[in-house]
Image (cartoon, rainbow, N blue to C red):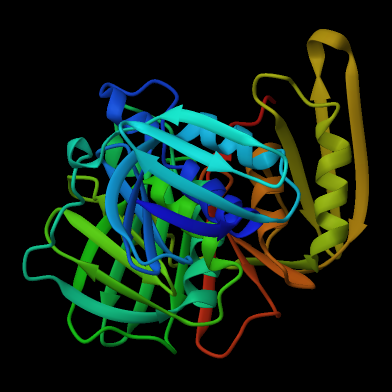
Length: 371
């Protein structure tokens, strides 16, 4: 088996696929990339049993074959080459790699030992523009949880219907719901996508302006973008009823410049308690007072901002890290914070900067104020 390929083109593809490979695999074969050569088409795959990702590359060859090559060794070698054609020749369990500088030999394993990607059983399919999917992932992924005891909350909930697509993530302290009415699916369906494949998708979606073909059955999902394919196992379980926790009646509405609010929260939170990260918002008339105090170290800070506020005077406490994450994730000029009572969740939404048919709702749970 022999083929010639550009070093930087191969490295770029392998670096994306390398994200699939775990540091400590149960099966030694999973430390390898699978190379499947069919004339001038080379399919490279990586897997951790839960997620399998493969990319099609064009190479100069008229041979066929299937081998598994040590991933780390190959990546480390490719990173050192300037742009040039590389020649790969595999025979008698040794892969010889020739560059303009010299020759390198490494052992390879039999490609048939590599686990095959899961086949989907009578899947539903829908097409989503890559840009929409990339935005949906980056808007929601940060709000998903890390609790092993509640695996359903460690992913992003995809809800598809003829009315539109909805993506939801929550860790019980914060929740993000991202909705698109300008893209829809033919049938109603929902499933929970794990974090790892979503992070991998994010890295390839950013550079694509085509559509993603998304197929899914009861237990797996498949994404096809340009020449890349990703198949992953879905999280098993029932997603919590997120609509029930979003308060419907919020008479107190605060409209404020996003960047100003974000910078204020960031500055004041430096002086907050290091365990609760609590900042207090005190709103009266057109003035917002943001304060934080760390009693143990006698640190405190306070800032005043002008805002547009309609509602009763109120004091409410939030975890500054959640507020900062949410404000960072919106790209609006102005945001609206809707509240009802100091012990009920606040709802953050952008006032501008959205496309037609795009909706973002962020919910943040309050923290008890130390009186």
